Image 1 (tube, rainbow, N blue to C red):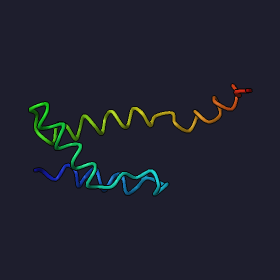
Image 2: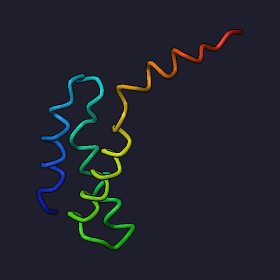
Image 3: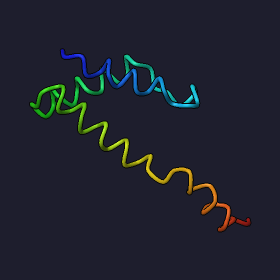
Image 4: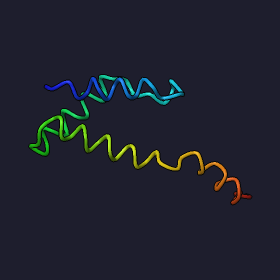
Length: 74
C-alpha cells in the first residue's frame, strides 16, 4: 500500500473539530477497499476521495445560516 492514507490522515488531523475526524485506520481501510473493488491504484482512489470530500465541504460555513432561515415547526 502507498502512503496516500497517511497523507489523508495528516490532512484530517488539521480538521478544527476533533470529533469530526475519522480514525486514520478507517480512512486507510476505505481507500484500500475502493482500490480493490475498482481495480485502480490506491493513490488514485485517495485523490478521488479527497476531491469528493473537498467538494462536500465547500460552502459548509453557509449551511447553518440557510437552514436557520427555513425553520421547521411541528
